[in-house]
Length: 301
Ligand code: NAD
Image 1 (tube, rainbow, N blue to C red):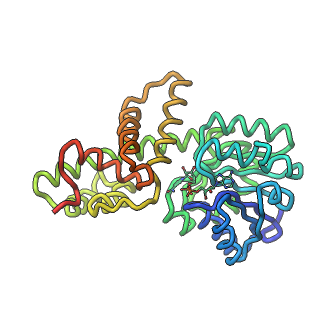
Image 2: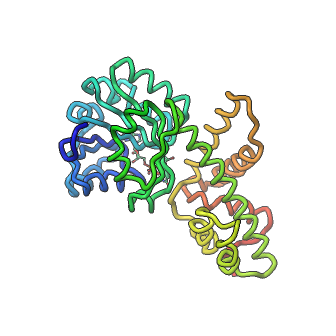
């Protein structure tokens, strides 16, 4: 195993999640070489001590492992296996760790392409959002070869407070879909509960305080309840990204022949919010769908 500091990490995708994650790796003493289509964020990272790349292929030539943190399946394919992708530039035995939340089927396709080049590939999506990315407390779920998961466990320890090997290629992203189904339904139910409370004259903050220690309490309630109570939908995790995840869940469900009725319902609510122009809002804004059909605002006077 290459020792810490000697290992040169490439990091592609420096958005809400990727930037703080790359920063944590720098702070832990790793050499980090960065690339994002948005060049201003590359300059920000260079000021923090990162090495600059002008494109993914330049990055691929100088690193020992590549971490990807882009929006969706199409972005991952572009960053890794397209003509401009990193794959063809890597030395044999290098590993790509894709921490984006993408379709498990696309993860498996990328895994196979990587195998043809003698490159190892892990799908390692995360849960926790920007605050946990900043504090290095993400929950990381990993698919691929177990020995490769073990080889990079010290990197996962810097980025997350938990890392779980879930199974073969695609298993990390299937686990992430399970996470996203639960979070979406949970946010929607929280919205319904707070609309009911508000309409009956209660203070939503008092309701959250009263029930968060009981069975209904959850990380979702702690993080998203106060945002709903204040009508603050600054992202965070954007509605557009949750739509992508629920679409992937429904496609995967169809492939497997299982039915996910509540997921499909929340996915349709999210479609309506996106049509209203709310796609860039935080996903706690799912509550505004419930507000609109009842004509009451959780944060209203
Ligand atoms: P983001 O849109 O803020 O950042 C993505 C970055 O990737 C952008 O800066 C974009 O320019 C860059 N990018 C896209 N394609 C690229 C390519 N081919 N080459 C170089 N750069 C490229 O997204 P985010 O919120 O950081 O989310 C990243 C991933 O993490 C998504 O899959 C998301 O579902 C997942 N995720 C996000 C959160 C959250 O709270 N934001 C939480 C858990 C998981």
